[in-house]
Amino acid sequence: MQDPQNYFTEIITGFLSSLSAAGITWFYSRKKQVKEVEALELDLVDRAIRIWRETGEALEAKVNKLEGRVNDLSDENVQLKIENKGLRKEILTLTKRVQAFITKYGE
Image (cartoon, rainbow, N blue to C red):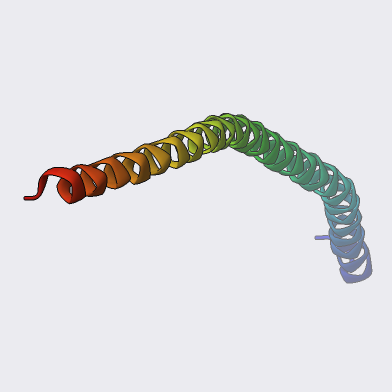
């Protein structure tokens, strides 16, 4: 039979060894987990940046296309205003000629 004090010492020694091994394992695994979380966060930030960049590029392309369309419509508007002005003059001239014709020859 073993001495109770030796038995108790062996149990305490085993317990403390296990506890210290668990503590060391936990400490290093925690460091590893923190690094993994930081790496994951960096990966997520990189993804977010890529998504924003792609979205910005897509929006920039759409804006450029719309700016071109606005410029085309502005040019067309200027041409239509010039044409409209000419047509108004022509209507005024024709109206005067019709009135002169009516005055001269009657209805």
